[in-house]
Image (cartoon, rainbow, N blue to C red; front, side, top):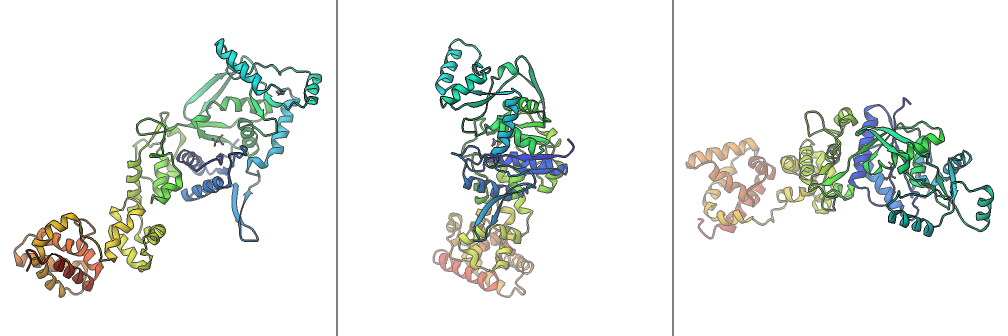
Length: 495
Ligand code: GLU
């Protein structure tokens, strides 16, 4: 098997969460780094729990991450202009619910070869069997009662209307071994695995079986999935062998835990990937962060662009210990990636946030320029209105620090306003020159005029570079704001 083909095979039974997103990303990076193909397969055999909205959220989440699948489901517009979900690729359909004939064929092969058999045991019988096994502290697992039913017995039970499940006949006394891409060699004794069900009575395949049939038919070379599936792998290997199919390579990714070592909670990563996007996290940061949940370079570097990840990522540098989801690190990475973008790019990505805040009425170039000034301080796109709103709307409330200290500064600010009137052009450099010259002439420390000027212009103690902010506002607006400040605080202690 030379061709690298990986698959991401989610069950569409809920939102697209962080763990799934990481599995998808590792598969994608692995395939990209080796010129391989990435296949998306929807494992929707659980009819009761699988939903179309969940398929959509998976597709949306993958697209948000920039993952493009070579084969798999696609949302297209039909003649009526409505969205329709279909499949593209030579090994389709890529929805398990549409592949039942393949599973039936494979079951028939196993039945004919006596590697599988019909089992008529009822739920009650199986529960009673399990109970007595537990009581006698013996091995828990199917007893093999229906293993050797004769044709006549089977016909008789069928005639009675009993509907069998199909069980796989596990060979006794052997060891199933495989090499895990992260954990190395793993062996399991077959006696620990009882004959397991591969198809329900209605003809619906069980996950382990459908997965093997599909991975084989889709020519998957590497199965990369969560550690929660590690106990399924020996069963799947036995199925491959029984069907005479080549076994793919397996890699199981470690769990992702909360920072305190517990399972992920809603507060930490147990949320939809798209919620993070809505909250103002950008693609590059999320992809970068997910890549670090279980993988590291030798020098433990933190910041990677998606392109760098494609080049650098390798399964051999994935660790064996659980990854820890750290919100603060994600936020830090988001800030790092945001400041690498241009103001225009940030504005485009934040267009929904800007609209929501009613700021889309301002000219795009002005929004872009304001964002450019503040981008070093933006941690999430959702912070943008709060960070730049005051640059557009002078109807802000002064913060407490300004309120308590403004009155003593009114006289000097009023004098400075006069000096600023002659700043021409009203550029950052010219304003700075004027303000510094003013401080010198008045024999005051620069900070004693820089701060009050900032307060007057913005009502806050922190913000963008003072002179750029002043230039951004323009002379009329800046002088008007200074006038407003003098008006607000001039009554007490001012001129
Ligand atoms: N449908 C399974 C899941 O979502 C896929 C497991 C696998 O990758 O084999 O967990």
